[in-house]
Image (cartoon, rainbow, N blue to C red; front, top):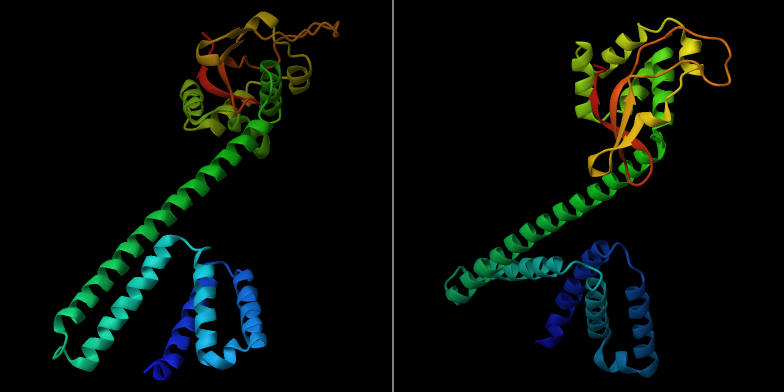
Length: 279
């Protein structure tokens, strides 16, 4: 009986080993350990006494268990379920339910339950891993965005003025990037247009001297105050265009920007989270 079983057992061990190897992301140490064990058994003469097939089968069984330690436990349950279900199906085909009917039916039922349960849990765990991976990607994206946002209220106003003064497609997109989605909608509403890019272009239409608007803009120090929840309230409705380094008086070369509420992102740059037009 044992002699007849050695090759089927060896075959099952090989199949399980290959599946476990794939599931373990192709770990090599178990195979190297198994090879070392076979060589040791061969040198000690144990393999000759036990027989090559049983030596390989037992060694492969150890390798299989070692590989499965790298694998999520629910895969173990799935493999057991497939084995039990397969045994039940083979018994049902060979015995035609004339003998050991209860045991055969029980094996099929248990196998199906184990397979279904393990598949469901593997799907749940995979979804959770995807959610965690997406959370990491979202966090990395937020960090990347925070790094390129303006760091100070003055730099925010200067950059907005620059994008408005020279409204290329990239500049318009960048200006809207500084606004959170709700603030974009507020800006568009205040300008009576459909979206943020149209609002930026409508402000650009009010620029009469782009160079003066960008180079001579001055945000007074008292225009920035602390707001609720760690925000900064920036009054960009009283911008002047007569920097101290410029002795030439300038008329208003472009529009006032509005009342901006800035929220620092990830301890780095600031985002406009609330927009109000100048009163």
